[in-house]
Every structure is written in structure tokens, then in C-alpha cells.
Length: 276
Length: 179
Ligand SMILES: [Mg+2]
Image 1: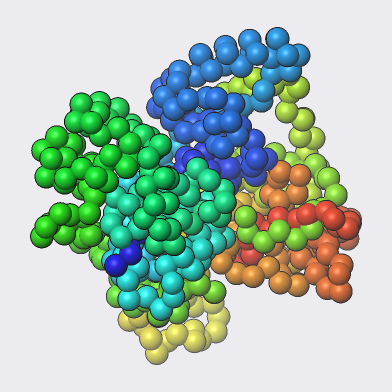
Image 2 (image 1 turned 180 degrees about the vertical axis):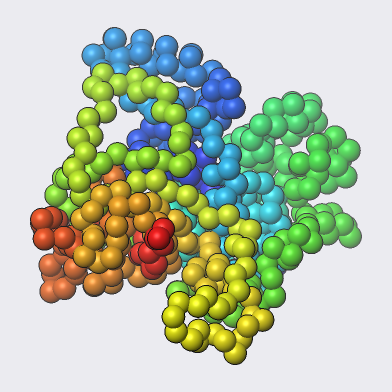
């Protein structure tokens, strides 16, 4: 029973690029409310070594310094955050994803789990279709990770983001167990569950440093020590605990999709609805 | 990206007015951004993304000197979202600046409803990205020839050369005017 995690790439920065096409392919960062810190980076900004949470004045000073040394400063566009825009774009993405599966859990502003079982096509094909539909309809690039549990879907998504060879969609089912181990071994847990630095430390104290350690850990032990975030995401249950398979579907998602409009004018919900 | 076809000649368009008015803080750039000398092409400027709240429901009829075709249906409420935006996730509103499309009924200040889910086919009015800016033009796409046509005698079409790429951002489906 495959689960997909769909996650927008550089979400805030990508939203800005959709409406300011001249910023496409450029280094763009979005700053926190008071314009203090970097809260989103386009791929090009990441390539310049700009870190998440880094104070903007520091970034600017560093890049200007480099510019003096090398003759030309890197060009970075910094934008104030526009959360009304990001919320609107998030709604659009989530509703599009809802067309692909009747079982959806919105996990964050730019991430959603989808259950892919019982659908007419192989998960990887659906993943590619999700990707192209979201890109075409909203202009936002996404990556899709597919695995037997939510945790593994999250890890697969991480792999899809890291390695362009996946073409944006990584289905762990296409790999054998040895390959999965090899790919998960070097992935630090903190990197997959971004921002969970304290959590990563606590897991580190338990000997869980990488995605592979996490996969091997008995879920009860993790449950005792991890935050809610990871608790909702832990690995395959040992025993009867199946909550890593179950998606949390708040009722308001259904309310947001009135009967008969789930698939726009196509009326084919829950089947994916692709060509207009 | 929505469909990429062929890239047009560079043409400077007027700068955006942005409802989404993000301040651009600084370009730590050795060269400043190119000055956008506004040419009065039918460039698109500001843009408002649709909210998902249903629009106010309207009731027919509006008498305008002829019987309303909806008279039999007086109680039916109209949801403008359903009526105008069949793919609500893919529909956006943009405001027109410039007059290069006046002969197509698109005037300065009009709002355009743009559907990104539609195929940009020959003859459709599209939002294209030219030189990093939005522009509204009619897409001509036949027999290997791709160009963006204005709808105003004084504005020449933007011809696309071999190997040049054009990004079509969306297809215009409605024009909303103030009267
Ligand atoms: Mg993301």
C-alpha cells in the first residue's frame, strides 16, 4: 500500500518566481517577517551556499566580500515574505493533489501525503503525472517520494530532491533492500525532518543518526523520545501499530471540496483528472 | 513551466504594478537590473491570485432593454467561480496595462482571467513571458511559424526565430471590464 509524499521545491521562492518570471533561474531568497533571516532559497541561492535561517545582512556582506575578491558579486534577489500569496498557492497545490487520491493528509504548507493504492496506474506513473500537473497548473515544481510508509515516503522524497536522476519522482519499490540501505545510510535524520535540530540531537543520543538507523530502530523507543513530528512519521510498525500507514485527514479538507466539484468539470474524482 | 514553444525577440515591456508588491531589497549585483523603459505594448502588470472563498452569488436578471434569458430561473444563484473558472486551482487574474490588444476587446485596466490548465493552441489569446515580463498577445502557431500578434495596427507581431523559446504562462479565457 504505497504512500506518496509530495513536497514543493523551494516553496516560497518558487511562488515568487511564478509571478516574477524574470526571477526564474536566478538566486532568490525570501526573508522572514522583519526581513531579518532567510526563510526560503531558490535552487540557485542554495548553490551560492546561502543557509536556511541565515541573517540577510550576513549573506549580503559575505557575497559582497566575495565580489570584491573575484571582480563580480553574485546576484541575489531578496524579497519580503508574502504569506497571503503562499497560502493561496498552497491551497491550489493541495486541491490539485486531492484530485489524485481520495486519501490525503496535508502535512505542511507545501507537503501532502497521498495514499496511492487502488489507483489504476503504477505509483511512479501517477507520481510523474502529479508533478507535471502541479507544474503546469500552478507553475510550482514538486518532488514525489513513494514508499510503503509515510516515513519512507518522506525519505524517498528527500532522495528525489537530492539526485536529479530520479526526475523528481522516487519510488522505493523499484529498489532492492540492499540499495535502500545504501541510500539511507548517509542521510542524516535532521536533514530529512528539516528544522528538527533538537530532535536530531535527542535521536543521536539514542544512536539514531541516519535514516538507516531510524529505519532499524524499534518504533516504541522512538515514540518515547521523538517529537510529535517524527511520532507521526515513524517507520514501519513492528507489531500491530499501523498508524504510519494511516493518513490524518481533517474533516475540513472534505468541506473544502464540495460534493460534485471534487474534480472540477470532469466529475471523475477520485481518479486523477489530468487533461482539461 | 507551462508549455515552452519558441522564444521571442527581446522587447522591453512596461514594468509590473504588482498587487503582490514585494519589496525587492537589494541586488548585490555589480550591474544594476536593466532599466525597463516602458513601451506601450499590451503588457500585463498587476496580478491577483484568486481566493478560494466563493465569490458573492449574483441573481439574475439584469434588465437591459431585452428579456433576460434567465427569467425562468429567477431563484438560481450563480457561482462566478463555477461559471468562470472551471479549473479553480489553475485560474489567475491579471490586470492589463497598455493598449496593444484593443482590437481584441482588451483595454488598459481590464482584468484577465487566465487558465493555466488549457492548451495554448493557435489563435488563442495567451499570457506569454517575453524577456522575463508578462505580455498578452494572440498566439499564432501554424506551419512551423510561431509569433505573438498584437491586436492594434501600430504594434507589429513579435516573430520568433528558429531555436528561440517562448514560454506561454497561461491562456486568457475572459476579459473583465469596469463600465
Ligand atoms: Mg518543500
